[in-house]
Length: 287
Image 1 (cartoon, rainbow, N blue to C red):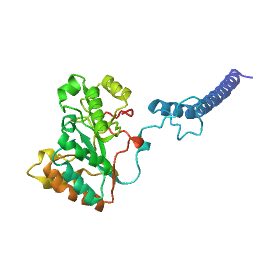
Image 2 (cartoon, rainbow, N blue to C red):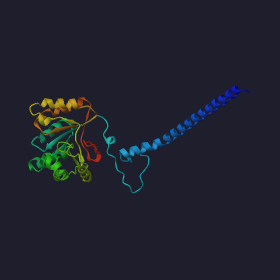
Image 3 (cartoon, rainbow, N blue to C red):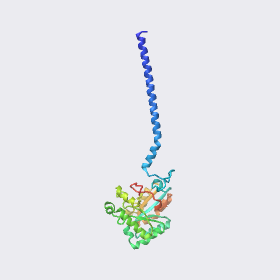
Image 4 (spheres, one colour):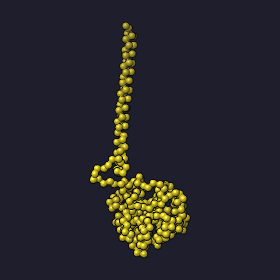
């Protein structure tokens, strides 16, 4: 056998060994990839469950697993707790006022219930308290809107909780009801941006509603027709909460606003403490 023949054989053997080595490497890579995929697949459900629990509290009303005896079953307050269908909540701030009775007249004529957020300084006026009682008697909800409506006192001096508690206590004294819902003057943002104040609100059992539609009615004394346009343009989703005030221009267009929502297929909701769902600019599910 010649040297040339030995060289050719040696080259062929190296090629065979290299092909075997490549096949072995590819086989090992495939096995490793398969193992990694199986591990990820097995861990996926646990990861998804952990992420769900990290984002929201456990919901015993939708889980097939029951909680151990002795643990309190707490109804979750989140998106799923919101009413279904097209519902609009008409809300009125800053009462009671000389206009409250006339607002109640229109609502009674239209067969509509509404939610009022009343101010403590006005609630103290004896001449206005009969309309507060009437509102509750006719099925409307009366919540709190602070005692002073002063931004500095409520938010900068930290008197939000105490003022709301005093306001809710006044409503109880007048009506016998025990409301927990309030509307922060000027809205919950930025006044309630700091979490410690929201902690105190939650600890006090106070709930908060802002709004989805600002009619800007307070600023349209000479242009009541613009209030209607503002409401129409801002109505976009099935659940709307309309911010209005006890103002004569609002009273003037209230029948038109009710007619608009009726024609659009909305039902009129009234707040119920027992069926609270969160609606605040802070997106704090506790409030």
